[in-house]
Length: 272
Image (cartoon, rainbow, N blue to C red; front, side, top):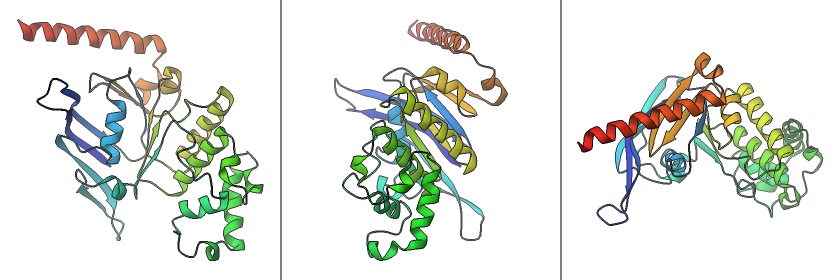
């Protein structure tokens, strides 16, 4: 569904601060994939997300998106140069900070109207009894009592409630892919667990395509059908299906050590 072809990006080229953040990334993201992404700080995870979402433009390579046309046929087009605001129509992203995904000074129902793509014009007219009833039904899925707080400003909600709401709103906007950027890292353990279970629930019920960056190795193993490990701007491990399901934390650590050892050996051979 999304294809990254030989993607690379170098910051400050030709200067003492030159840094190649991604090196020739080739990745096929299939419809319905739930991919967990792990790697140490500086591995390239956030840069990869910024490339996919359009926040950054790659120095080299191409990005292709495959979507259904008006006749229901799949059609692929290149989106490498598309800016972030255009990609926002089909790429959703949830950040670590639970305050970023909602408009705190606006009511819950107004936030819901915006996410349902009814837009700003005629906002109050759009809020009829039928629409409010639909919102309440959707909000009940969160099991947080928010369906009874439609008129409350979102800034009154807890971080866990806001992040759960952000997740629901992102799902209802029907993105082609949803990028989760450590979306539970700022929450307490109880709320983090709630949001993670909602993530699993929505991914399954709505057949979402999801990429989730996490520093929690157990989450990376427990969720999704596919796991990517990044290091030094490269994808060094891509495991899916039954192979992923059988992985343990010790397996991951051992594979990382083996790959790093092989990489160091290859570097030494090049230097010789």
